[in-house]
Structure formats: C-alpha cells, structure tokens
Image (cartoon, rainbow, N blue to C red; front, side, top):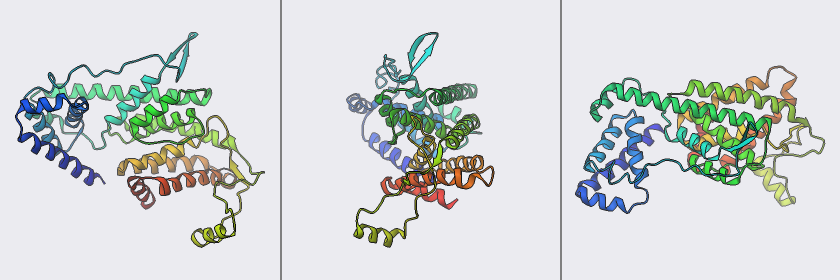
Length: 358
C-alpha cells in the first residue's frame, strides 16, 4: 500500500510538472490566481518538502516550485493562512467561572496531526533537504523541532478534552462533528454528537501513533484513554435480561432461510451485553479503530492491532471475565468490523484484510 501511494503521488506530481513546462511562469500565475485551491496547492508542496522522506517526490515538488518563478510566496500566497477563531456554543470549557469554546482549537489540533502525519522516519534527511532548499541544516532541525512541539501540544490537548468528556459529557454543537469529519475525511456514526466528537478526537490521537516523530507520546496518551474505556466497559456490561442482540433478526420464513443459507444458524442472544445507552459509550474506541482502516496504510493497521492487543490484555485479566466482559465487548467490535465490510470503501476493506492477515 505504501508503494502504491508513492507511485500515485509521483505520478500526480509528474503530470503537474509536465503541464507547467508548456506554460510560462506568467501564464501559470494567471491560471492559479483564479483557482480557489491555490493556497492548498502551495501548502501541499511545502508539506511534501518538509515531511516526505522520498527523494523522488521531494525533487518533483521542488521542481514545481521552481517553475513558478519565485511567485509561490508573493503572488500565489495571497493572504496569511491562519484559522479564524469565532465564538460558538460547541465544546465549552469552564475556567474560573468563564466558559471558553474550543471548537476551532480542536479542529486545528486534529488537522495539524492529520496534515503533518509522517509515517516514515526522517533520520539522515536534514542535509539533503538543506541542500535542496539552499539553507543551513540548523534551520531544518529548528523547523522540525517546532513541528514536533506543536504536535505534542495537540496530543496533550486532545487527551485532556477526551478525558473531560468521560467526566462530564454534555452537549456539543453538531457543526464541530462535521468540521472534524472534513479534516479526517471519515464519517463517524454514534448515538449522539458527544460520542461522535470523542471518536474523531480519538482518531486524531491514533493517527499520531502512526507518526514517527511523536508516536511515543501519542501511545502514552492512548494507553491512558484505553484504560479509562476498559473501566467503562466493565461497568456497563450487564445481564441481557431483554434477550436483545446486535444481529439482524429474520422478518419472515423466507428471510430466515436465506439468512441461514449464507450465514448459518444464528446463535441465541448472549447472556451478557454491553449497555451502550449511556451518554458516552466505550464503543467509541471500536469506531475509532475501524476508522483507521480507511487510511489504507500498513502502519495504521499495525497501530490498530497493537491497540486491540492492549485492549484484550486489559479485559482478559482473569478466567471469570471471559464470558462476562470479553465476549460482549468482542461482539461489539465484530459488529463494527461488519460495517466496514458492508458499508466501507475499497480502501477500508483492504485495511481490514491486512488487519486479519497480521
């Protein structure tokens, strides 16, 4: 999957480069000045230069910047690309009796981790990048140090906000859910907006676990959150007195015959079930883990496997918890996996296949 991603990126940059060679810098500037996505295009080129460890892709990005005739920062930049912080009634934090909305800050934090995700190690690349950009190596190290600092701050913020939702889950503006979904490009389903926002913030932390620069700190944050979720799971497992089930029931005899021919005889309802009627269900972890499959990267699948193993180790700490805790939680996770198979994209299905093959 990594090889395919490199090939597609290299092919796209090559096509852009071939197109620009047929035009003068003035013609290119004139075309891009009318393009509403010109800021994102220039930002993407700079992101490739600073984040990619692939020499071919970095060289193509630098060549494209060179063909713009030095106008990338003047004519094409337009205005400084800074987030506009406006008041909202979404994720509110009370400090000394005053409420402060964090919607924009959370969006910037998740966007920072997603946009600057560095899967491969950048060791031994400072000198080459400094040579390409004609700048001292100390400048490259300083920029990367600043980037790591911002990533660590974003990780700490997301962990604290998720922990706060455990203690006092309240109303969250649905607009924040939409904004975070646009950042990570994944649609999350949940019982309420608070649960969906927690899923998206947790997904941001899981993406940070894939980042070679800050994965150690991200794993520590995710571990603390997983321990809290395991405590919730143990508390919310209860006897299945209503004989409810997660699986679809046959509506008539024909439906039952078809179901048995494809799936076999459906098992009876399990005697214990994970109660998800609370304002914040621990199944947010399952939804975030399956959302990693939509990335299609092997490193994301490896993170999902590592977190899953950690989860089962915490749940299965004694023989008595196998039937009363582990199986109900596994049923919920299996239910999320089936959603990936039936409703997911081809990329998520590939990621799930890799998950099963490890």
